[in-house]
Length: 133
Image (cartoon, rainbow, N blue to C red; front, side, top):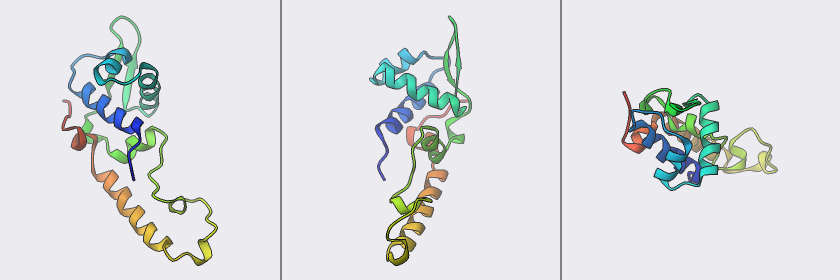
């Protein structure tokens, strides 16, 4: 499994937000992390919909974390971005043309369960090295 570019950008952005006391605009986050503004805005909208960040409009507005990063696991972040953590097409509930005679499905299923467990255990703080009070 490889983290997507958006996952990488979200991790960096959340780490940056955690290190700041004030709310930050999408533009400030974009510029500080060298992420295109449009991508930053879309990512922050997803994170806001998932209640990982909260947005406030106006002169004092911006984005801030809704909880410490050590309370946000990687699987939750992954799902908030609309991504799947499936290692193979048959890892999820999708039909597979080899389902009846597949010699690797059982092993892949065990691997998928272990991977999901790791993504639940590791927090964003574990990756970024940053949390907030």
